[in-house]
Length: 361
Image 1 (cartoon, rainbow, N blue to C red):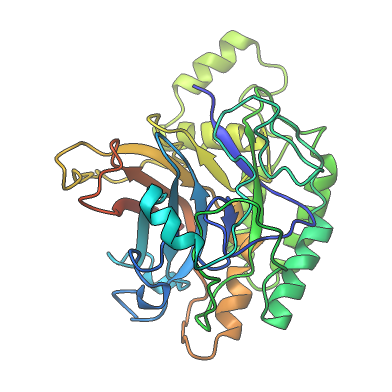
Image 2: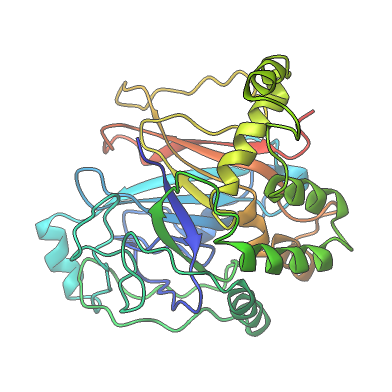
């Protein structure tokens, strides 16, 4: 099964009122505010501070459907149950649509359908990017847009909205990251080292600046994205490499596999593989995934990878938020994994989310 990736999109206008978008940060756009959990009410069970929207993922299965992943922007709360929440909401039925049409202007769904190769159904089709295309990502421009958004405390301008099913525009004073639009594309079959050389250079420059305050975390991510490391060492035959790999401890095997897949598209923040298996950087604890209230076993759906934290600038938001006192800095994790109800049932809109801590010794 092909894995779909969420890649930060340069110079993109982010509509924070549209539930059909795939983005990092910003504020949640629900199909109906009346039937959804209020953003301001989502609080960490440990520090009781507002949870941040980390990702919103439009992921239709049999109908319009969007996942919202929230987390506490504090390293100290990462191991606490209730410091992460994953909510799932479906689109409105015909009667509900008629009511909502009277309340608000429509938003641009952009025909965002996972894995649809029809040229008429393009992800983020604003005339510049289409499904299946992999334009070079100008991280320099992207980071500048994000910095500007954080400095001015405003989000990007709202785009035109030709499709209905969205309620009134959401305005909130709740803390939130600046939004970053994600372009969705299939995972490349091979490493994108040459293709992403420019992005790697920009990332290295960005890490050099961040390293002054977060040396350990930056060192781990730099190692993850390093292009010169491979399983086959210089002078080894394939047979010797295979034998050496077999002797490699499980922890290192998982990290090598994780690193190899991330290298295929080093700017990836989201990995979507409905019904597949998570890509673990290190062995996870024994997890008991609770069944949905309808009795169905939840299935793996998606995961976020640590590059996300750098695009959201979690440390700068933690430092600038005087109302949220955190001694150890912003959120820090290796991967955030979500399992969901295969029937997307109406008995529960809460799904199971697990954040693997950064210090997973």
